[in-house]
Image (cartoon, rainbow, N blue to C red; front, side, top):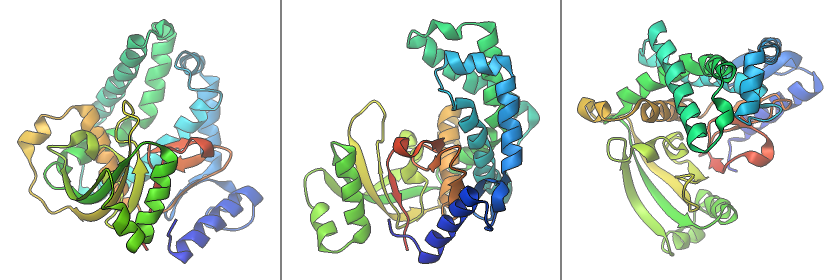
Length: 309
């Protein structure tokens, strides 16, 4: 990956400090770092302990098959989401009303519930599970509500132009991403081969699903390898040639988008603005996966992001 040397060293220093207990921006008590924002390990541990002490959340964790460390990861994800999206919402003047936060928690919970029922998981149809699910979604509802507001303001305003290649598997995608990031004749050859397109423009109003993916969550010059749709095995490798944020707001188009679409669009808009701030997670919780905007185990990171020099 091509990083500024200083940023790479800083990230390694932070990880070393977390593991060894030596100095560093967060010191031995660091739970996560987002740029210059340090999330206390003590705060994280208290929230994790509270989650696992709540029988409702434990039952929901089991019913939804989130795994042994599921609640821990979601606590850390909520804190990181607040740091990334909250900062951008504040800078953009997006207000978050308490009533909207409650509605977001309920809407996200309902969507997760329906997905499980549709998949045949009848274990989620239990009052205890539902109460636990609402506690879980409530944890992230503030930043998600802010993301919905950001997503709405981004419609019409944000667009990208990419050079991209469609490939069949992850290994090929990541290899191709490194070629694109390096540039030169090999990159030119890749972009004239099968499945390649140059100068493709994506707009939120016409490509809302794409706008909710990581390709809208990186700055100009970045290269990403990701799956545009989990329902499709095809991988996309894209170099963001230009990223525009000065378009005219399109209210009618924004009104046509669902809350879940606006949420995804908003978190990617915030991610792109904050993308030069490295996100480092205490290894006991996992690593930050920028492709899926989540905390994951290293083996489960869902693709590749290569930031520009």
